[in-house]
Length: 155
Length: 155
Length: 155
Image (tube, rainbow over all chains, first blue to last red; front, top):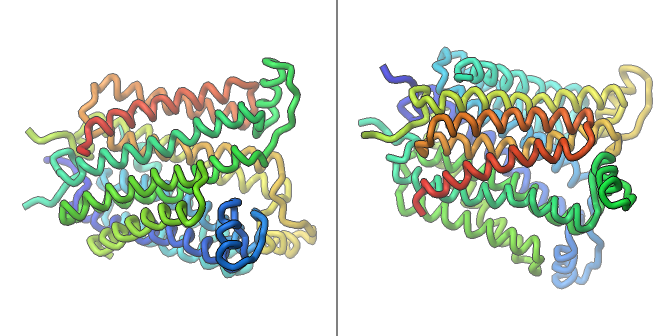
């Protein structure tokens, strides 16, 4: 019998699709939030952005890399890149390793909830260890899937 | 009947392969451009890089994180990581959701052209809102595919 | 006859799974190393992290973005994001392009060894051009797969 493939006929992969879509969209929304704070706080990265502001409003600012609001959103975005992208890549490969369906679903769900909580904890911000806890839960899920992937692969 | 799979027999995925390859290669080329400016402007990140320059040329410099040319290329590279990687991941999953073929092709093409334009606008640099427009076009394509992926997935 | 699919029945993909898992886990381990140096050197990124340290130990520090140990690990992690993620994405697509099996295996193996060596060279650090060599080997592997992917795709 043929093994699992990456298609919607694979019920584990059909679930993965939903959760991967949610965490990737969440990651992309960080760009929009960065843009919002850059405009609100007039904290732009490049000369041409400052010139555009001056043409439109007459306000004259220098490029800035140290606005606290912008840097916080960027820190959250960077943490998503470091954690969500490996989750999606390993989760996709993990969907092919014939995992227990309930166990697989729990992996996807816990990761998604943990990362949504991580973003709230980072952006609000909530006192530590809130953010650390959200990060850690997502991290062990990703490593757990990584171990399954390496064990299913051929050296 | 079985659904679409990730193989070259899936015509939407065969097209995705081309465009995903192009935007990923474009992203990787940013590394080479960073390296070129680091050498040209002698703006290295680490002590061992500065020591290597000294051994080879006798020129003595300190590590630098503020060279404008290097920082511009790095900003462009980072923006690619934030946008191209989610596009490739969501586009791969989107190829399985049985989209309208013409609509799918337009998604892939518009994203690719928009990101090539974004890089030119960032590196040249063109006056704003050139770069913002390139970014925004790619961004709504990615979100559009993300919505299709989440809707096709199982919660 | 149907073409190659992304499943463990595709022997090239079964090998890819192993190497992709290894390099992704390696990338994720950089987070743990960053956290370790942040705690050891008391170099935290946010106010809430500093407040948490103060509550637990009474030590009062300001957020810091310039700790050399932390910045070195973060540089290594960022380089992994810039190189390992494109390798995994292009390698996955490359597994579908019906490459010569021995040639494909060499791609995956050389990339993995080169990136492990790159991390050692970056973190130890070894004198240049050690790190540059590790980076370059992985880079040409990724570009080689990228060219195969673009040629197999449909424009």
